[in-house]
Length: 77
Image (cartoon, one colour):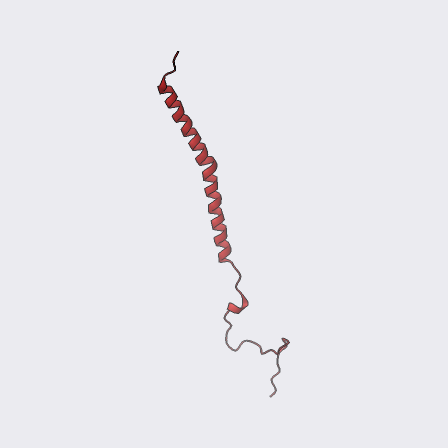
């Protein structure tokens, strides 16, 4: 008894759909989600980076005058 070719074609197509769905939602979708979470985390870290002391703008005439050792200099009047 010969099995009809039409049933083999339908079986192959249904197996292809199942395998494609498993690959898409089982492998590709989680990889995409993990990648996007990583992108969001790195953006948050880049927004909250620390600012160095040298880049801060100090208001005028508010710095104490200090000598080489870091002690305040007394102004003689």
